[in-house]
Image 1 (tube, rainbow, N blue to C red):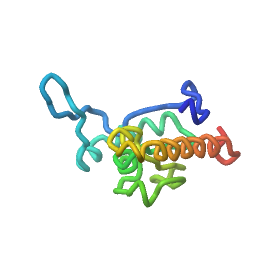
Image 2 (cartoon, rainbow, N blue to C red):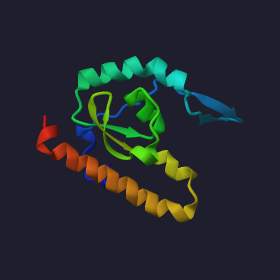
Image 3 (cartoon, rainbow, N blue to C red):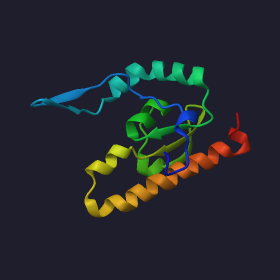
Image 4 (cartoon, helix red, strand yellow):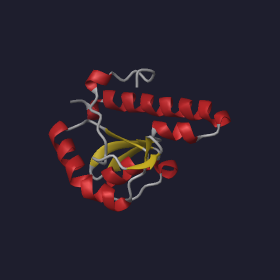
Length: 132
């Protein structure tokens, strides 16, 4: 966020799904992706948060967040960028953890693309139609 010029203190960050699903691996717990039913189960909570916060723009970091915000599956690659998410101004991009699973030779470009997306988010929230 800092590299894109987004001020953390001016940004509301939340999780689309409100529980931590994991698989035990020895002494470690590895995050597991929630299924569509789990995303749907917590969608009402996310909607209430958004109703209270009234964000200028919602950013979906990854497919799970996009599903939670749109109420239907949306492929990140096909929908990356500005989009309306269930009547709200939105933006879809990759989840930063996606970079951890990429081959090393692809990470630099993917990181640059993520930063470019976040700079677009910053630019969009500065536009008059998104102003508070």
